[in-house]
Length: 156
Length: 446
Image (cartoon, rainbow over all chains, first blue to last red; front, side, top):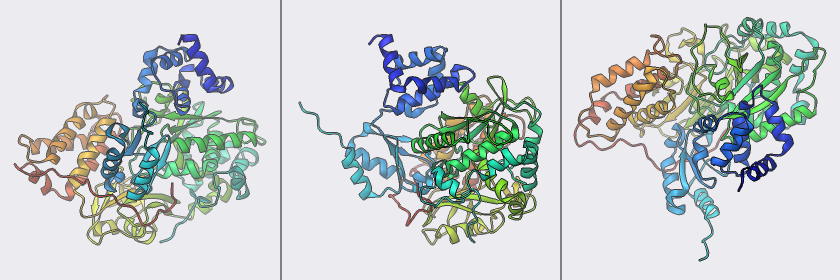
């Protein structure tokens, strides 16, 4: 896809008025880098090299600045479909490793990753998938969740 | 012991996050008083009279800080909704259940500081909290509370939700969030002076923890005297205690400061511990971990702790966060994991985080795995002590390495023999990988 076409797709995804609003909220356009990244991610857009270049252009900085900002977000390097098991202190005490092992067995190792403390510790153990937090997990609820998250077998 | 709600008032109401529910129960009354009935100077007087202190763990006087900042042309208020402390879930809960209380508190603070903009910096991965807060801002804007001149003051305050990564270094200072908004590296800056304000795009800004702001609506509407009547002389009011781990009913409990011990919170509010043996309480802001009876004599009162109150209880009270573990848990593994996480979060500007914590974490991990030769225990302990005093010795520009070391030391002191035991040949790895556990119930469910 050409650069103008990518820009048009991303502008349409965010919406012109929302884009203007975000850019105007900051004294310098670079302030809008993280809000734009997260707006796009929320819409299921992978933050790849093309998207990074567009954000850099829009915010009047080099792509290196955007990449630097992204380096703090470990979740951005994950697949949108991945299941992030919280490995905070409380979740570890409440059996996070068992949660991870059960889901890896059911859904495959690649699908399951770990996350930093989600600060929902009263509901430990917790996990997050597709932006939704699941807490108070036990074996039955995990099995039910695994059934829902199973990808349909591909047709050869 | 009973709950006493100021910060979390109305948290259990159905649709507590909706503007009409919040308004029906007196919401935005405090902001209206601040913007229409009294001037900004009187707001500062009221908050100073209430004796409100920062709820992020520093416990600095809010009113006094505002008065000092008032002449410094504060352009914006930056609100920390990131919970940099593991085990704490208070600010996330506030954003998800009482977003209008947070917005109203920020409005009042912005007015007192004559700031025209508020940046609500919230963890990007808390999708629901971000969404609830964004919706609440839209409601408040449509109703004319934000973005337009308000009351007789005519002061208009604009709001922006700013997503940030997390967690951030514990006690990383007030400069971290402005750095993140500017898309600079998320690291503390060396301050120009004790009272120097951080800057954002060249203008002075004021940084507040979300929970501190959550107290302001009630102080303005119910009056400073009512707040001052609770708690102690130097530390009035309430504190919201996050309790999680091996208790029957984990949750967020707001109690009057000084009304009991952490053990009382566990027994009376969190349903007690799940096992009969001696439990371990881990404080997540620099206090030594406590075991058994000591938990029942540790007061929920900052005045009684060496930091911030200068009291006899050793360590930092922090923001009142405890994680409870039963006897089956090996402190050395908790310490190894804690130090590893802290080492990964350090920005590396100072020697403690650049070299100390990473080396220490690696040694402790080797000890945890057991049966390894070549770990120099005296050198390990000496370097851990250096890290613990790095802030006081002027060797670090923030408190992150100190907090990491103090918590690690506290956990290791619970079972000091474990360290030398783990260094012996043939010892099994020390692990807390246990079965799944679920609490009987949850107080204020996410």
